[in-house]
Image (tube, rainbow, N blue to C red):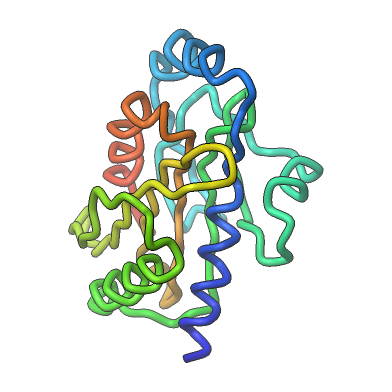
Length: 192
């Protein structure tokens, strides 16, 4: 039960990181012009334990912005963001023990939890994919906020016996620009 409560609190932290923008059209144009055309670049994270591709135009979010966008003490350890700060790729190694074979159980548990917390969410995918020898759980959905909707592509996997969560989120109106890229990022996961 403690693992589930920890995961629920992490979910809230991950989802609160994407904020709306007053000038969405301008941001969408910037993404089309500058980000989507940029290649993904491979990064080694967590002392080489994880290899994953990130958009080359993304930068590590500064501590000050991270504290504002992710006010919880359980904020992600590492957050990449676009130049506007509205599209984020966040990483969190949890303390929850998990095996590669238990990922499907986490998909079921987390999707049931999300459906209770966000009954008006629109679901696109909840599944397990085998990538580079790892089971990767995926939850893809859009969730409402006060003034907009957020597109969330969350995936998670076992790394060193613990659950690692990755969340890609953007404004829903930018989903078609980011959806393929989010899946390419997921497909690039290599746990060392």
